[in-house]
Image (cartoon, rainbow, N blue to C red; front, side):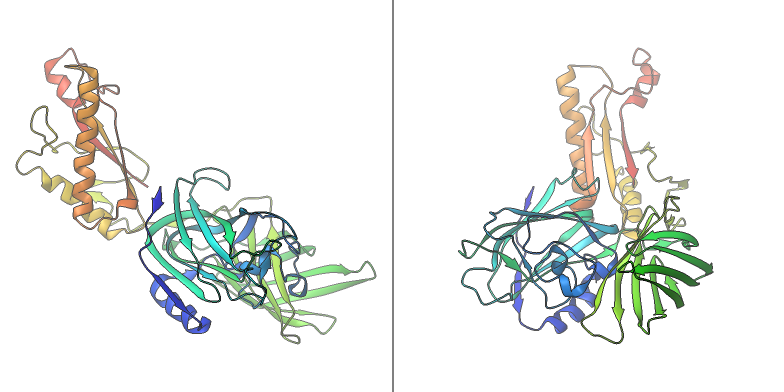
Length: 415
């Protein structure tokens, strides 16, 4: 669906913008140093590279937080599609597009379309936003929270340049969908875009050693020190036997198979790039929820498991609650308010008495009633899905009048 634009702010103060957005809307989850990576890129003037001095005009320039710009390949035509995989799933609240590019007439990106998916890099993009950007400005857009692990950016037009399109930065601000994470395990050997690295971990601290061939002429050895882990963020110092040293910030992905981020060279401000590490053994992040609040009344809730709202009573054959039945929905509202990263799916069911098409519509109308109740109680629409099944999924014998009532039910699933 196409979301309407809430509002647009434009500014020329990038530093102030970053600080403001960080405080209000979370971190820039699309930044390379925060663990994002491209899975799809368009034809570009320069291909991606791990070294900063080769990144100008490459897709990485969109996410590297530098003055580099992305530029399309000479003569290539819009739309230009990028797909970005984030380190984990986030609740997205702000997008920024920097059109302060090179001084060629009409070269700046004008119209963009952004899709969001929790499923994969190629599927599940069922929510989109569309914007028209102003030239030579940092364009900011806020949106209702959108859940995403993959972001698809489509640059659909520029301001008239027939040969090239440029965009300086694309920033995506948000908060992790799951705030609490058990300590991660990075110990062992990882394959990197240099060569292998071996981590030794002690709690939230770590060290490492690595080596790589330099131009097939000499072996450079390095060591990692002052390593600290905060959630799934790694920060450390590195030093090599060729007198180079610096720092790095990496993020581990949800699956525990990838560390990705940026390194910086202390001795050269313009020398930085990507550091990507992979391992075969998956040690995924383990999320923690506030178990004290995940209860429906006295019933403890298991994420992903269907829960029947037994006392949610409707007027017979109508999508209208019986007096007092709303108190059951208030329990669900309380859960969702206490756990803002959770989403809910509502399922409506009837017995098989009457015409199937009427039962189907009745189940759908009752689901819609429940959804609207949650929305009126400040639960964002984006967190709620629902479906009616009519009498197609009985849990009891419809031929038994006493058992039949158990088929007339509303269920929910938290995830």
